[in-house]
Amino acid sequence: MEYSSVNLELQQVPYKDFTSYDAQSIADKFRQVIEGEGPVVDDFLELKVLKSYSIFQRGSLIAPFLRGILLSLCAVTTVQLDCDGQEHFVFWPERFRGHESEIEALSFPEFAEYRTSGQKEELEDGCFRSIADYPQLEIFNAMKEQLSSGEPVDREELLTLTNHALGFLVKGRQIRETLEMVLKAGVANGAFVYNRRGRTIRLR
Image (cartoon, rainbow, N blue to C red):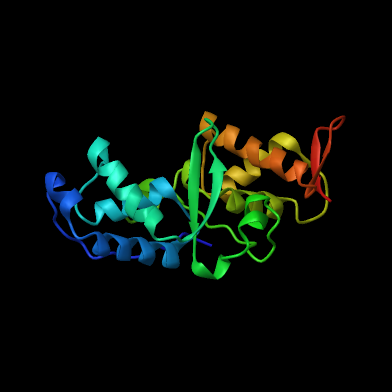
């Protein structure tokens, strides 16, 4: 499944005036994206909304203003660490309320899909996601699909297959470390079984 982008109304707001702009309008756009594109990671979400006002970077003034509005929504959120140890919120549509702990534990079969980004130069603005923009449950789901035959898969091959399934052609440091984090989480929660001698992974 490809990532489907919500089209936000485009407006022109000067950077210096943004923090005095209508907060309700900004909140409404956040809700549009969360309900239409969720799950969506905080940085991706904030930058998408900001771009709709013709502003392309947050900066030290806008960042806390934007984050304050986003958190005031009291939307359904989970938390994940990226490969550099930074904490991020993932925002989910309202229908996922009450399942936050299952989602964070990568043990939520009711959401078994993942959405590929494809190549950045071939996509409309707002559709491309880097690996940091992926909710980890989506990465887990992509990895799980590569194991769906039930046969053991070489660990390195699994990382490569998952990388391609997500839409990436190369596997840089950030991608590799993120995939390894999700793989370890899948082993830890019992979804995957790791054979250390053969360095293979299979579904439990």
